[in-house]
Amino acid sequence: MKKWKCSVCGYMHTGEAAPETCPVCYASREKFVEAAGEKRVMDLAGYLEANIKGETWEVTHYMAMALKAQTLGMGEVAEALYRIAQEEAYHGANFIQRGSKINDLKSKLDAGNQIADDLKKDMEQMLAGERGAHKGKNEAASLAKAQGLDELSGFFRIAAEDEARHAKILDGLLKRHFK
Image 1 (cartoon, rainbow, N blue to C red):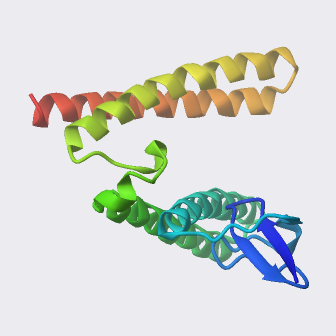
Image 2: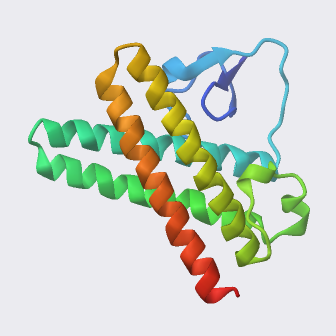
């Protein structure tokens, strides 16, 4: 028997071959690498972490496939893929929210996979993150532009403006509801 590690979420599989798909994040067999000597048994916190990471990965990939389907004129396929992405986001959000309620688990989770007991604190952290993302995306846009990658640069700029808008929304909500 061999040990196989999912390179997407870290799930460990024992068997002669890697599974067809990861049971945690559903990554394909190609994403598994042989993990010689690793004998890690995943605890509940590990499963939460792996599921949060896996769900996040799935959201971005389903959305990318939906965008591709949309550009190919396959509206029904695009809508179904968008819906799946929303459900995967819901799963990930629930793992974060529910895991953050259990003190035993909360202490074992990566801080990035937690929410605070205080909504205001969470929103303030997200506001800082949105502002940082705005700056980072503008820097990336400039770099892409300098390399002649105009389409990528343009999307970085669009995404940067979305991040700035998100920051304004959060700032307004904080001022109105958490004076």
